Length: 223
Length: 323
Image (cartoon, rainbow over all chains, first blue to last red):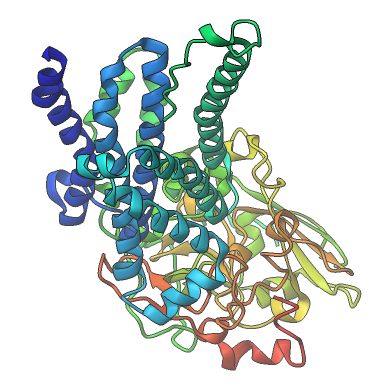
């Protein structure tokens, strides 16, 4: 109960405010407040910043489970939905900047881009896949979907791979940054694979023929 | 060509613009021994680059109206702080931040290959006697953004005539300085260093081709390719090789750096062409730099608007193949 209150009245608001900081910085840049600016190519700056921040939030969302496992701070899961929704927020902003500021609502050109340019096809697919996850992020939807909820939300693994791929393919030459993201995603997804394989091995051992009746059910908490 | 006139001040004897512009860095070097350095730099005013500085009175030039577009140039700060110059880093703001290590004076250029005037020349001697002109050119980057730049330079054809190429010279190749101490980006193998570019001789002799030594009436800032760089307004920006130390006349077509790096994305010709897309993005439109958040994209023009001047060079060629 104490943890719940701590999260409700302290950690969650703190993370919420911190998560808005990148948006606030960009807004100050756009308005020229506090000496901030968006540089010579403000549209590109907004576009890339929103995309990168969205990708960062996807990684943060995926970081919650490994950190919980490794540190035992199981209450961290209370922050996960917010991080995921901020990823969605920044990626929708990313697409909106592209649609409105970069393409000036030229739907024909946007459609051509989505169909003809693989990196945009990939990025757009990732964004579309995020939509059902955002819609089903409420407590009510979690209850309604039950076990299927977790299955659906594993789409995040595919989404983050598509996101990094999208980033890699639009970089002209210097792929050091995208490579770093590939490495981080590999670690985050690799962790889950290892946990999964360990669980399976343990389950198989415990389900041996002699002690079949006493095999404890493995508590799996795959997220 | 190198005769010294006693009463005349050689350009190299004047405090180089670059040194003047980099005074903050020199100051930093002078006090680098202590923690003092950081505080000194921090308290120096930073507004120097914000406005276009006045033209350098030592540079005598005329505006070439025939080869200038009638459009307001992009701001000095944007032209000098939004650069692709991978020798100083791959971000657009890296060159302005890191190019202080380049020493553009004294500067020598080696001329070799199929020509009569082989040798190594001081930069000042190389361009001596050629009329210095201001030309306001459109500039189109292969990344689909564009600027308008008031360049200062000499017509490349005049320089080439001075170097007396033989009839065996079919191409002219240019090479950038290779010195990771001055160009820290050359320490990482992002591209194959040194940067090289080349033109067919008839392209090089086209009157639009400019060997630029300045912009906004002043010597080139380091980050824009000091002390001399190519400007080819009908081609994508990467053809405009910077900080040139070698000019070679050759018989066979050389490969250029970006073509070596990604042959399916960057060709030898690299002519601006809205009908031939980059494999990953469209070249039909461009975003003008410095026009703010709500500036509309502009349609990209064939040969960047210089079709009348250069189209004859590529007659009969398949520009989809020879992109």
